[in-house]
Length: 300
Ligand code: UD1
Image (tube, rainbow, N blue to C red; front, side, top):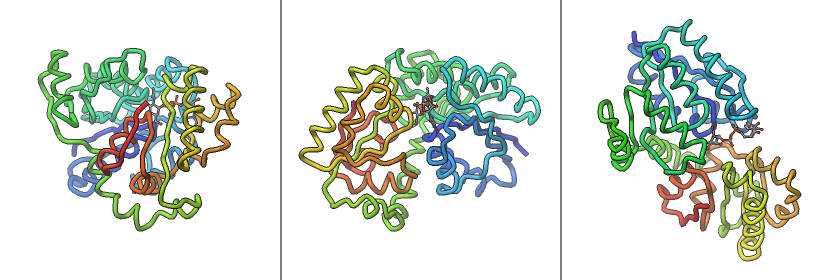
């Protein structure tokens, strides 16, 4: 029996893990035992639990309860706790996803214990070292043994950095998820009705630190959105980071013209994406879904 500890913590990782954990369970259930460890990075029910329930992800073996705080403190606390888990479970592999602080903590804890790391969504680069995600990606890839890339461009990025062994283009797990849940979202979600939407609307997400942490930049985005809302209804599920900063910077009045709601469960979100006239986003995942579903998008 091969033992795998999977580290997840943030919303996009739950989505990616749903595709892979299903295969581990259904195809390899007798030969691979998976222990899902939730770092607790995303802790609100609508950022975490709803995804486990709706996407049928096995309940985490452990939730470390480490959310909030600065990047260093958060990553450091995760590192300490994940090391303890790995020492007790003694897995053959550690599986990590994407580029969050949880990804980096999992990669570091495992590699320092000489446990091989498999990284799903390896090789992506923005070439912008001011993004915390870019630092997490580069460092996680550097210590991974198996690098599962979503595209040929990602494979080339790794080759340029001298990473050539264990590198494979396996396709994009987010595409698997987008296809798998597409029809279910259309038939089950009632979100358009709940928000009182007609067919013509724009969908917005905005949560990246580069956009939210600078008051002037966030003000510009909010003004632009309220101007767009004069022409077409704008639906904005607001991430907790953004909600807090919009209030702190005194920008809440710009939300008045928008149709705002809490972060949405996955099926509601992809149902809205498929029905929207256009998507405005700074999320890597949402921009990919827009592409998969053939919706016009604007990335900021
Ligand atoms: C993280 C990832 C980002 C990913 C995003 C998906 C890093 C560096 N960034 O960003 O790559 O695209 O997740 O959403 O790992 N908060 C809550 N409730 C929650 C979660 C967060 O209130 O359930 C608050 C936190 O306390 C914090 C802020 O929102 O103040 C930001 O959360 P954090 O996990 O640091 O980063 P994200 O912006 O979510």
